Amino acid sequence: MKYFGFVFIGLLAALVLSVFFVCYLFRQRLYRAVFIRKIGEFGDRYAKLPFFPTYMAVQAADIAVRASWRQRKHLFKAVYGKKFDTLISCVKKTNLSLAAALEAYFHPEGKLKQVCKMLRQIPCDTGLLLIYGLDAAAGNDFKKLRDAVDRLKRLKLNRQENALFLYLNAKLSLNDGDMFAASRDAALAAGLFKKQRALREEAAAYMLLGEIYRFCAVYDVAQMMYDSASGLYCRVPSFAGRAEVLAAKGMLLAGQERFVEATELFRTSRQTFKALKLTVKEAEVINQMALLSLMRGRLTAAVKYARKAMDKHRALGNIQGQAYSNELVALSFLKQENYKKAADYAAAAQEGYSRVKNHAAYLDAAFVAAEALFKMQKFSESAVICQKIIRAAGRHKTGFHVANAYALSGLVCLHQQDFKRAKALFMRSLNKEQASGRYSGMAADYANLAEIENCTGNFQGAKVYLSAALEEAKKYGDDDLCALIVDRLENLT
Image (cartoon, rainbow, N blue to C red; front, side):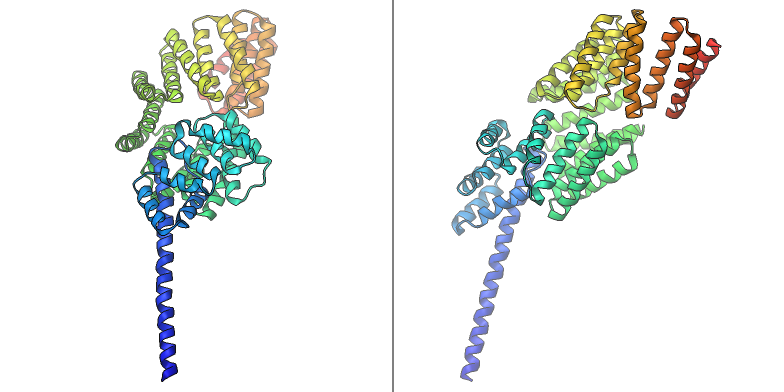
């Protein structure tokens, strides 16, 4: 009986200790989960970065959890109340690089300079390089993004770091117009994020995949990607993320000319951002509504929406947003044949894009200005801008179709009856179009080459080029263009 009592007391003590240990672990996991969740929620409302890397959030949470009971309780209350400086101070005692990353996330205005300063001292710090790259991607600063990606390529990365590297590289490839590389890296990143249970990063990767497939006009796959992102944002949960998906789906439907459905999605997305007081996001959706109106031919509405978005972006000092609004207004006036205003607004857009170093968007706005000047018969000025575009496209890798600038330069020379130079420019344009497989562009170039042959009296050569133009127009499926070319062929005969 005496031994039985000892055994019973031992088992009871073990049970009590086990209960205390389980409670301790549960409390630790609760603290850890709250820290990670609150860091992510902050990004939905205030942060400039698209997300804060989950593995870094886990590292910060682990440091906080290992603190003394009294300090941990204080940190829990502070983080729950969105007072993150207390957490940063705690992390700084253990990990300076992680603390700098947190500061850049929670205090995006100015604190990134601290990250850049530390990178000069520790150039191989992968965590800081990833934050630097994410900030560059968020600000469309592809020069900085390329710098971050090139430096990360030379480092040995773990699984978490490699997933983020692939995501950044996919962003860069999309800007460069390399859709295959972009889709490959974004898909690999999404798979790695899934294994790490990094839901926000996985959702962002699916959003990027949706954007890639939308640009490639693979609409059904793009829809699947957006649906996957939406499901993940529901699990997080993130109302802002879900609103972004709605806006992206709106652009997808607009590309399919499902304008009524797209309008409804934009309206819902805008209302959500307005309720969350995310004015920049709301203004971006208003710009998308301006683009939708432009696509529908509702040019007055397009100008109205773009100017409304511009006012909101200007109030917040968002130069990128203002530039896009100016570009949309320029496009609207170009279609209204108000070429003077189109050129002025396009110039304002160029200035904004130049300030934020968004080279791809700068080239688009510059081409609008060149088109407007051409329509105003200011041929020399249009040609000067086209040459600037061609030189800039050579310096910066973007998805801009430089063939357009060669073709417009060719039209300038054609109007000036410089047929030799015009033919050389149209041939350059044709080579670029053939390399990218753009049938519509190839058809236009062949038609322009035919016009040169016609003007110089080489009617047989004109017939050959028009026949080639007809073949490309048929591949593109443009019945109106086919009819126009057939008419020109008949007139030649």
